[in-house]
Image 1 (cartoon, one colour):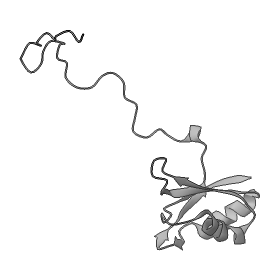
Image 2 (cartoon, one colour):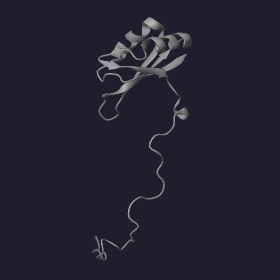
Image 3 (cartoon, one colour):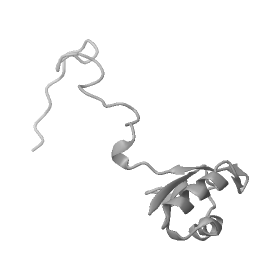
Image 4 (cartoon, one colour):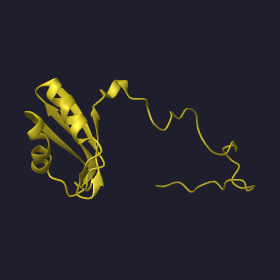
Length: 116
């Protein structure tokens, strides 16, 4: 069993289309098209799980760099989430000003009226 990453997909690609592209190279176990959580629109990449590792390697060799829907596909072995470097860096500490609690652009804070 080998999981393949398929990148630079046209947003209109369906799971059936992707399965049709890979099946001539070997048995496809599962196709997972990644979609945006909010809009439900394709994010332009997918994962294809192939039963036989050597067939998966042949599919990578045959399909990486080919075109689908006018876009050049990027296909390689999917890396587990833990092996990928984190993007964006981690943020520690607070950002921004250093002003004190009562320092609002040079003016002291006015006391608020009670809310009841």
